[in-house]
Length: 555
Image 1 (tube, rainbow, N blue to C red):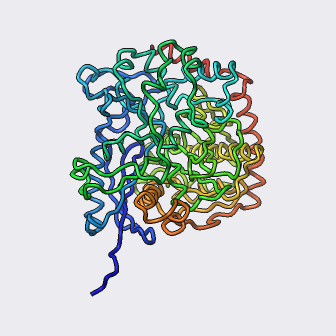
Image 2 (image 1 turned 180 degrees about the vertical axis):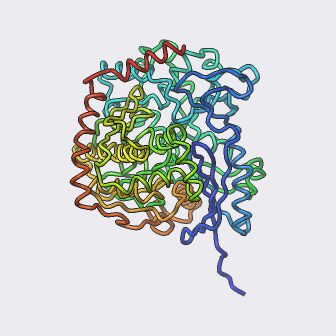
Image 3 (image 1 turned 90 degrees about the horizontal axis):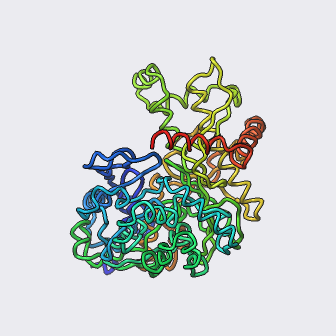
């Protein structure tokens, strides 16, 4: 009889914007055995608060935390059953989340929105990453930090985003002081879900650094916070500060309750929480300095480890150990990518196009892509600014908005669609060039997420960047990355790079730039940069004025 141990498995759970996905992975080689998806019952709440009829202002984006537990109760056991494995052979579970997505809770982790007295208070709900209603609070944080020469500001490229913990927390204080007073903990959803699994609250090093302004072991001090608002003085001490867990470490073990939810054995190891983008680096085997991973979906997040820590203007941050322990990790991003393409399809495509796509048995996105790909670069005479959801990098300003120039009476829908595709590639090029000027060059550009399925879009990126593109083998990069971290937390591998080498995978140089296209796109990119600087760097504040008019009119 064999004495060799049987195969071991891990589960990765990716909590996205609209759904959660569970993936069962073999520890020895990263083989993906089965997955299951659970749509959030309430989705993204951006118009009406559930069960109340209360209309939300523009730029709000909320979620219901109970939806995340539904993923644990349904997707995880379904994936394990589909994999046809013995749950007893699962040695660890890892999770990743969108960020910065914040949950206001009581001291025991109960979300405020689950208390009857706060059921009608929007600020008691989860503030999703794309909640951009705290821009004026971010503006005040940035102005005060610049005035006081706060040493941490340069680590975030000189600007703090309205998406992050402090801006959203300040908005909660000033717009819903009763809810703020009742809140004991201001928790990243990435940590809240681990708290529910283990019964222990541990902050992960990734979100604490990138979204929580934790640098060199310190948050912004009480004097700074009091200058923003006297009632904000104790925000860090009373509501934010918590023990930090290193990425790839164990946060704890499954409680009996969580074991019942997931169908996994009680005391299964649970990895420290992580962010959907950053965890994908392991799935892409991008654990060496200069390997940039662009996780492309509703938005795009660019993550890359470096061999030294420098301050890069307009980046989302640089955090020691923010992606891989022992290396400074850099993050940049674009707030609206797939969301922008989706907006166009939902609102601007003629019914005849929709009917034709249906007849051909393809999506409207694929239909538009096929039409757009017929024309040479520049034939549409259009350039767009990809700011439908503001600008995350390098301008860090969610008061900016989209722009399309070059329209005339002959412009076709597919030409506009192509201009939007190209605009996101131009925005990525701005980021890559900014890294290079700061002394952190991109050595390899790797794409992951849902959008790389569009081969035409990937060729545009290669041509605009004038770089080869590598692709992640897995179509479920975040979930695989979480599974890799679970394997490390359970002790199957000594560190994330070793686990990534065994369990991750990428195809090097799947796309290469086409010389003629590179030259043609340079002319369009020059116009993009002119518009980028005119509207984004102080040439005009027209976009901000328009947003102010809209707010005043709809208040």
